[in-house]
Length: 208
Figure (cartoon, rainbow, N blue to C red):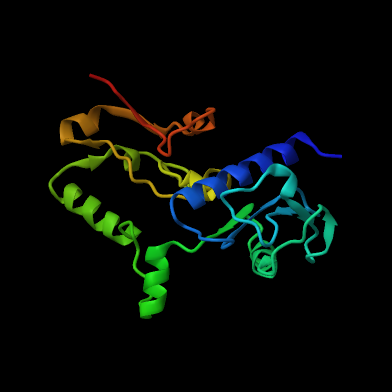
């Protein structure tokens, strides 16, 4: 019997496939999408179907060994790659495999995609230290804080659930204002909203 979660996941896979096709990330019957339903079942796209023209009823349910549990069609031969990811990364709940032309071009040219798109954390730390060298104070560091404190999460990687991210939002204070600072916290509750930002606000209390 189909559950509400399963129905929603089927619809989301169809929409993801439509967007992939519309953006030219897949051609013909390329690519595949899968998602965890629970601890024993995975919902995946069928073989030999364009990802831009799927319907929810086309999806296939398999177990974690790749055995089909339900569905009128068969899963793709690329399913083992998805299963290996799920086995090794319990934090991953969905896998999208596409063939973006730019990435494919890099692969054909033998150029590795091993450069970080965002500035690595150590660069952020160096920039922060330069500001502190000017005499400014990081209000958050003025007080004892939890060991793992973040203001930014990459919600696309489900990082809020895993509490991963960076502290890249700061309140920097001059010496007089730092002396007047009474507290500084990160309001992570803001991340629990229906459509949260990927940033959580830093809140400083000043006695002026």
